Structure formats: structure tokens, C-alpha cells
Length: 335
Image (cartoon, rainbow, N blue to C red):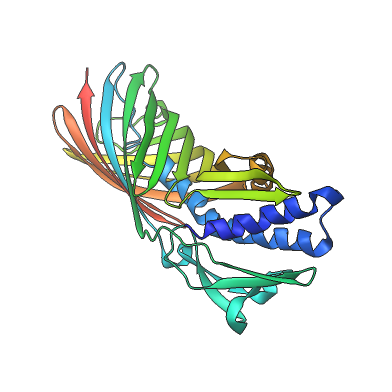
């Protein structure tokens, strides 16, 4: 991701070079729009995948824990990134001012999950030619991370859960996740509600997920004007943050020490991007990056099974949608 500096330098120089005139010319504004488009294409898959990473493992059964019982669990999560989310097909017609370098009309460029690229862009503003490289991805087809969770059984077939993963480093990035969920069993209101009867429940969760990329060399940009040098920006971190609401219906069926479960529902996500660092134009850069963030609603389906023992159980859940996610958990049940 070191090549991100070329993209950012261009955008900031456009602002700094024309700030004295209190306006950016039309082709300058169009170039900024092109840069924001490239940044959106690059970062959007990472933001979208957070809905799978942050909401996995909230449930393993439609039956609620018995009143005041506690489930302490440790989960391992693996997100599988499809090829379509690792690269993006780009054409010159997608731009206002920029063009793909080397005379090409189209190219495949990496997203945040993609590989390194030799693609570059070129353009012209006020008769001045410029060019910069495409942003390199982190080259990850599978993204792993662990998290702990605690669930508590409440009266009336209700269960609450919380999770907290303080910031930890994995493969040159840092991430954290926090959340809470509440599940209510509906089968209790019907005639057939024995241990091995089909169980039905609903669950709502709220998650905060933060991912900081710090694999690239710090960007240090100074601007000299009339003999005075000013630090415009020193960027060290790219921060992708998201908050998500999950709404799902859950069904499960137990067969002695084996239980299967499935769920369908939606996740509504709100995400934004931010640069960490310092400099006179850091605030401006982050204001521009806010235009990239947005809202997204995704439909998700889950299927899984539990192996049940006296004091613990092992859970496995697979989630399918725009991504494929596997979650495995080791649960200790306390009275």
C-alpha cells in the first residue's frame, strides 16, 4: 500500500496549489473526483467485509441459555475473499480527467485485498502532465482473527451477549471489535417445546469494528511557498471504521449431543475512512475521505452445527453472501 502516497500527494497538491485563489479549476475538481473514485474502489471491499467478520458467532442455537447460566467462548474467524473482491475492472470511460497509463483503455487494479500492480495513471492539469501508480493491496485471500465472547441466560427465554477485542496486530494491520446482542426464543410460546423439538428465535446485535492499515511507509509532504516550508501532511495510518446492526431469524434442531442451526437476515452497515497522522491539511484530507464512506445493507445466510458435551461445546458456523466466512468457537458453560 506504499503507492497510496502518490494518490494522496496529487490530491493535496491540487488543494494547496490553488488555495490562494480560493477555488480549484474545473479540471482540478474533476481530477479530485477521479481520485476519490479510485479510493472508493480500493477500500469498499474491506469495509463491506466487516459485516461478515464483526457479526459472526453471535449465536449457535435458537434455544436461549437457561436462566443465569453463563457461556464463555473463544472464537476463531476466517474470511475468504473471492477473486471478484480482490480486483476491479477499470476503463478510461470511468474517469473525468485521468487515463490509464501506457495507452491502455482498460486494466485490472487491486482492491485492499489484492496483489501488487504495475498499472499507473496519467493526466494533465493546466498543461502540466502528471502520473502516479495504482495502490497496492495487502495480498490476502483469507483474513483470520480471534475474539472472546460472554453470553448470559435471562428469564423469559432471553439471552444477552457481549464481546470485546482490544486493538491487536495481524499481518501489518491493527483491528478491534466490540458489540452486544440480544436473542429471544419464540418456541416457548408454542405447544411443542421439548429439548429436541425444532426451536425458533430472533436476534439483534450492534457492532463496532475498526481496522487500521499501517503497512505503508509514512507519507511526509512539505509545501514550499515564498521561501517558507510547511508540513501539509504526515500520514501514518489508514483507518476503516464501521458500525453495524444485525437482524436475523434463527432455527435449530438438537439430536442428542449434536445440534444443527441456520439463520437468515440482514446487516445494515455505516462505514467511513480516516487518515491518522499530522499536518496542516490532514483535516482537509479526512473531510474529503468522508465522501467515500456510506451505508450498505447486506442479506446473509448462516448454517452450522454444535458438538455438545457436559460442560462445554464446540460450534462451527458458515456464512454465505458476498463473502464466505467460517467461525469456530469453544464454549464453556457455567452454572
